[in-house]
Image 1: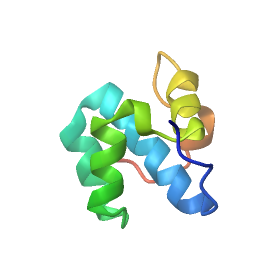
Image 2 (image 1 turned 180 degrees about the vertical axis):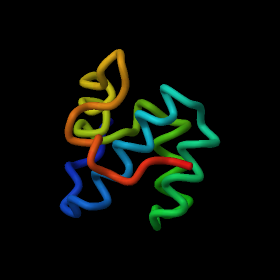
Image 3 (image 1 turned 45 degrees about the vertical axis):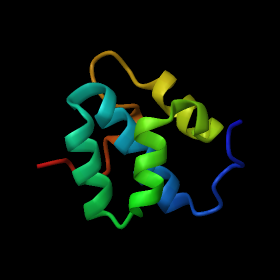
Length: 81
């Protein structure tokens, strides 16, 4: 069952960016990105390994990822090393 929507917009954006990174560049890049931005290990483990336990907004972000890269709203965020 998906979790309720996240109230912290900053954390939401970081997790969603991490999920897009996971799909595009692999779990390690996603983990490093989220860790560097303060996402807890518990949240990272849940969203990266249990798609059925992701928030609806996280799943929607993945669906909206463009084939040529990231959704427009993520282009302004810090790039991954």
